[in-house]
Length: 416
Image 1 (cartoon, rainbow, N blue to C red):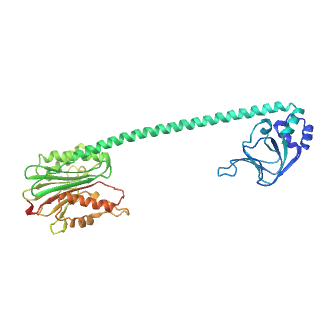
Image 2 (cartoon, rainbow, N blue to C red):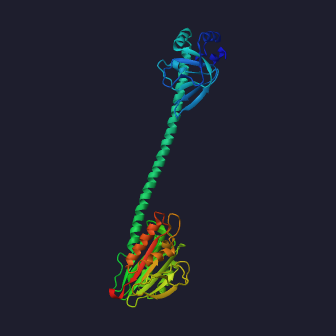
Image 3 (spheres, rainbow, N blue to C red):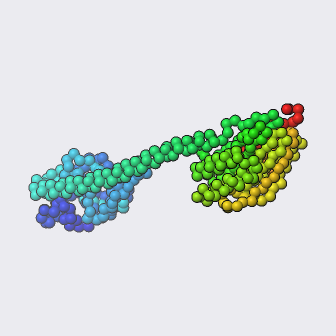
């Protein structure tokens, strides 16, 4: 590498080439081995280095996980000129040899001597400082602009997140109100008659659900029992559930047969409801004097009966169509007698479909197995034990559907 490299340094551009070469010949040459540091970030800036041969690395945060390579200087390039211009300046980066390198070194004392001999260099100094200042201003402006854009974007995201949070809180409040309304639809207290007791439990899959039940007095000898399951979950199914429940309660007051009640409800639903939702239901009338339970089943799960000897039977069933799909429906209409000591269980399919952590459903057989050990229990105890068993089986797994249980227990003769 010859002395003409100095001709490329803006600081010395106004010095005559012959004088510049003479000056260069007076400069010491230093050799740096690979990886050796010329100076580090924060060192006093008192020397200029011009590469004769080899290469230098300019880095930030040297020897740290955040080390950043800014650029590589080869023959004819230089580093450290600002250390000569700014008397109290500190190095703002670290420079080390990438390969074995030789460099010319100009000290501050030499630079002062050159400046006295060629005062025109002062104009170059002012020009360089002005360029650096302009570049710094431009970089600062760009940086501030980028930060302002980033700040505005962060503000917009924060505002959007706040709006979402407010909306979420509003929806949660509305869901709480909806859940309270839904619970208010369900009976607080079940009827009490001398020969029978009743029990019920409901476990929604969400804050609000589509299952419903009711047990209500029709007259001094007859008790209405209903259970239903809307084919969906959440608020839409809860609204559909409320409408269907209200219709059943209204028609139960005017119609004596359970099948007639469900047919009238289906007529109302198919003419009033504009969605594709439907509901399975079972509505029955218990004669508390004779023990007869006459019911109609609209696509719902067939009930189970726990006999006094501990055996469990699934009541025979025929076809039954859900409410809300067709104008004319077929219902499964039957009548059974509840013997003293027996328990009738109505349930929704959420009970059988509920899964354990391995995805295995609870199933009908587990319901039967659990029931066999509940002979002599009250209707409410039967519902409680079944639901406790289901929760233990579920063991924290996600619940896919609402679970509802309704039980009717016929007391032993000596109990009344």
